[in-house]
Image 1: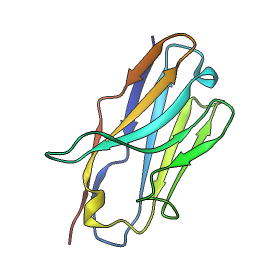
Image 2 (image 1 turned 90 degrees about the vertical axis):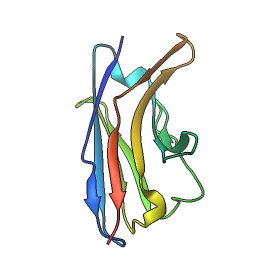
Image 3 (image 1 turned 45 degrees about the horizontal axis):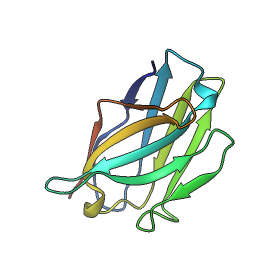
Length: 117
């Protein structure tokens, strides 16, 4: 089992920045591919960014050049740095840990991000 706890959400003005953090516990963090997803009201949950256990990153087209995902295996954390935020980024952001080989997939409880003036 992996427990994931997100933090760092909140209200920010358009053009501003937020830093989301996800702390994992309960298993060997470094073996998991980590991702950030988001779900806006009335929409499906979508992948925002991911970082594999080996450090490969992937981003949704809508956030490329604005968001950066990183991980610190020594601290069991994954961070999503979000810059140049716009109202379309408003959503609940979820941290995800996945290990396909083990058939494991874990979610955090989510953190709300609101981009509004």
